[in-house]
Length: 243
Ligand SMILES: [Zn+2]
Ligand SMILES: [Zn+2]
Image (cartoon, rainbow, N blue to C red; front, side):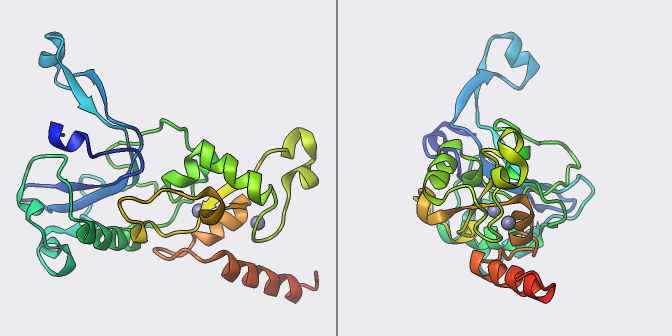
């Protein structure tokens, strides 16, 4: 990452990983930046021995292709339509994409990444950086759903009952086990969020139980609205004679 871009990168920013070279080039990963830039011993052992430091940020991958897998967006697609931009010719790191290109690309990678494993916010360690070759687990919750402060303010306003099915863990499982447990869901799709976006915990977040949270995110590239899922949930409750 070059110094010039370091000032402009921050927690919550989207990033894309570009595979270069002749064999199967293209976008092979994406996610969100998980920390502000920080300095740490250089990644090159020779430099490290000299005491050199380098700039780092933590990256949280929503998806990363294995080394033998085809890219999510092959290079030839980056050179046409909404994705055209000068940065694809460059081999240096930390390039800033024009906002329209970033949004179009975000939409595409969200649609194409396999939405097979749901990972709830509570299962993600705050400083987890799952950068492993071949890791294909898709993390569907986003950075806003992982923010402790945003979560606290959401619950303060909306309470602990699931916004879809009304389950309340303390009422169902007692205070010892259930108290304080709920997931938080972010309503806005990441590809419509602009660069200057700041989460509004009351307007943008809702408490949801892990079952409903998984159902909201079940369809690849298309998150259901709370109202849609509430409608579906009610319909099947009635069909089972529960209402
Ligand atoms: Zn629920
Ligand atoms: Zn969610």
